[in-house]
Length: 293
Image 1 (cartoon, one colour):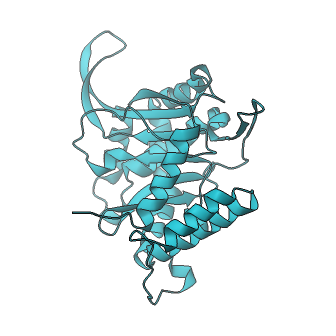
Image 2: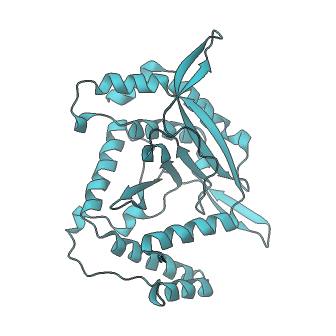
Image 3: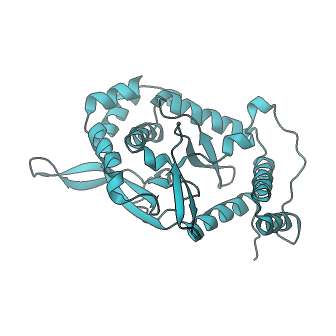
């Protein structure tokens, strides 16, 4: 059986291939002790209807945002010329998170959560829920196709003619060409647009949500240029840990993989990010307050 890439797979393949060709990846795993976070979530959600409960995904995103604010360079974008051996990093004013989500029959797309630096847990959860509702009303292949065309014309404007022509030929010719059905769409306010899936400033992928019984960590993660970082959240796992009194006990651990571009970042520069996560995850009052407001 031969299965040709659809538009979703073409975009993912193109973006990830570009990252691996150009970015010198470094990956580290930070094991977050989420015992107090999980206790706070269970306490808040107890007795509430399912649509009123706060998800782990929304809560951990809120915490990661605090870490990113402590290490703003993680949110930066790089421009580098290997020929001139010159580069620069631009750090955006806002934290725009690219969040991969699944839809339909297991396909994946990445939504853009803009201006996340001051969002509360409840605002984060409402935003993601709104995106999911809009996906239900959207013919995703058409949106992805429009986004791909815009990126192709952007390559033309940059002077990357062979790359742009190759994309156009791949989309229009051969057995793997893109076929977009004619479908009636919902109103523009009820469906996704290319702007909603445009690349953000940093990618955060909740891999643990795909299989909550997963034991282990993501060991390597692709960075999508010009982003400098990508984060992967693993599944919550019970592990034996040593507490401050040197007692062995069980705790709920969330492995978080941090992939970064070694041209612009070193491991030492990520220490404020990890220190911030250590601090807030040990602060029961902060966690309970952030979940409740």
